[in-house]
Structure formats: structure tokens, C-alpha cells
Image (tube, rainbow, N blue to C red):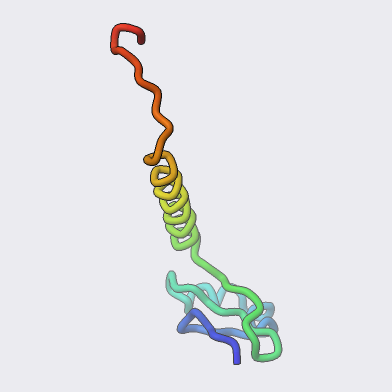
Length: 81
């Protein structure tokens, strides 16, 4: 059994027939798109997707910060800048 990461599901057929209705019913929540009763894709509101991308960028920045915190460091006098 596949895990579904959404409280709303819709079949591919229903999405084709009534795209605007599905979007309206989703009300800014993710929708799992099922193909033969298995999750095939997820339909995300643009704001949700944008937050997800920003979160992933933050995680990448945090990882890079941790990697660089170990050095090596270059000592520079302020007058040399």
C-alpha cells in the first residue's frame, strides 16, 4: 500500500473532467492524483510550492554553513582589505 501525503485525493479521470472544480474544492491544499488507486502525482497550490522551494533552499544554505564552519580560514588584516 502506498502512503498518500494529502487529505484530498482525486482520480486522473476526474481531474481531466473537472479541473476547475477540483482546484476550487482543494481550497489551497495539496491534492493527490490517483491512477488506478495509486498516487501518481500531487497538485500543489502555487503558494505551497513556493514555500516548499524556499524551505529547501534554506536547508541547503544551512548545510553549506555547517560545512564551511570547519574551515579552512584565511587570516586577513582589516587594513589589507
